[in-house]
Amino acid sequence: MDRKITEQTISLILTEISSRLGEATRIAKAAEACALAGSISEGVAVSMDIEQLIYGASRLHDAASLLNRLSRD
Image (cartoon, rainbow, N blue to C red):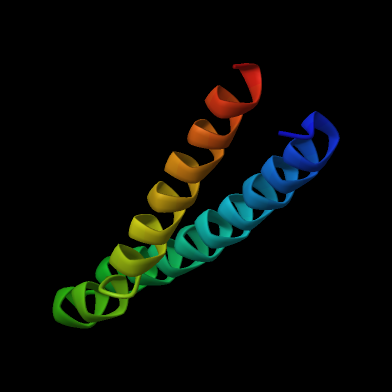
């Protein structure tokens, strides 16, 4: 496996993870603002979009970890 290509791929994956978690953070802050304003139900509804972003980030992290392990062999 070409280490340079693998490193570029891992770098792109990490950038995507950062992007997804940044979006999750923005959603969490919006949900928190709703809750602090007294609209708990709306806050929970807003926060529902976080789950898919975190799941996707986790799967991307798994892929980056696997590529890293494979490239060392």
